[in-house]
Amino acid sequence: MIHFNIPPFVGTEFDHIKTAIDNHKICGDGMFTKRCHAWIEEETKTARALLTTSCTHALEMGAILSDIKEGDEVIMPSYTFVSTADAFVGRGATAVFVDVRPDTMNIDENLIEEAITEKTRAIAPVHYAGVGCEMDKICAIAEKYNLKIVEDAAQAVRAYYKGKALGTFGDFGCFSFHETKNFSMGEGGALLIRDPSLAERAEIIREKGTNRAKFFRGQIDKYTWVDFGSSYLPSDMNAAYLWAQLEMADKICEARMHIWERYYALLSPLAEEGYITLPHIPAHCEHNAHMFYIKTEDLDTRTKLIDYLKAADIQAVFHYIPLHSAPAGHRYGRFAGEDKYTTKESERLCRLPLYYGLTDSDVDYVAEKVKEFFKG
Image (cartoon, rainbow, N blue to C red):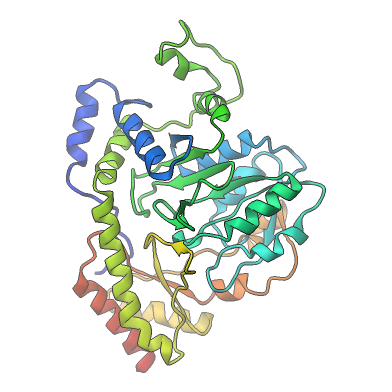
């Protein structure tokens, strides 16, 4: 069986977890958490990075720090994971969905401005498959209307737009270290903070509303409850697992890019003959090989392809059901403008296996079966 995903494992995870245990520090903000913070800050050049228990929680923190309140509206794509909407809906806001671009599956930056109302408070762009949204235009719109930007960069660790790390354009950026991501801690994420003056409040929110982080740095002699918050910090054992992979980040990235490029080369003839559409990477974007997908002619073809691959012991999957068509989407959101591409393109998209450790022979076999399906 060729699995769709196998969580990354480089071999030093157990050693690091044992070190955390031996140091008698397995709760949050231990030595491995601090190493991960420093790595993210150095890699992205952001003012402050904080590990969280999930990207969902990073988004929630971004919503809190953006002062999203009941009755506000937040613009986002409908083609995204539920967490993008949940973070703002949980604050009482309405999710305003905008159509995607068919080439990248990212929010169509040219449709954002017409979705803005007097209730709009933020934009939540999602960098699908680690390919950057058109952040120059999105940032210009946010500045014009005084809106916050909370980037859902869950899939975009080590991906760039015009040479700048995704997750660092907005007021806040949110990473995921879920088991399906390029680097994993099982469940986990990170909040990136552009304005250093907001870092202290972010620490307080993350630590149940206390100034405990300042206490541990020796800045105060006791800590207390000073603001609203929750428990958003992960165990240092999770961070130890992640740190093993961040130490090997170059190797993991190179391996994933090799797989992505091999798929692209092997399947290009099918695309040239019009059977499928391959991913589009704009020239000014540097992606991170988070996923490899193809688009079939329609939903029926995709369903048959997935079944065909399953019979060949290959796990291929489709992705999101657009949020505006979901029951909660009807309750908590609305679609602004026309759904020209979101539903149609989502029904065509099929994700192929891609993970650290996938072999060339596995990629060749998957590509062979895809070609066999269409040619057969």
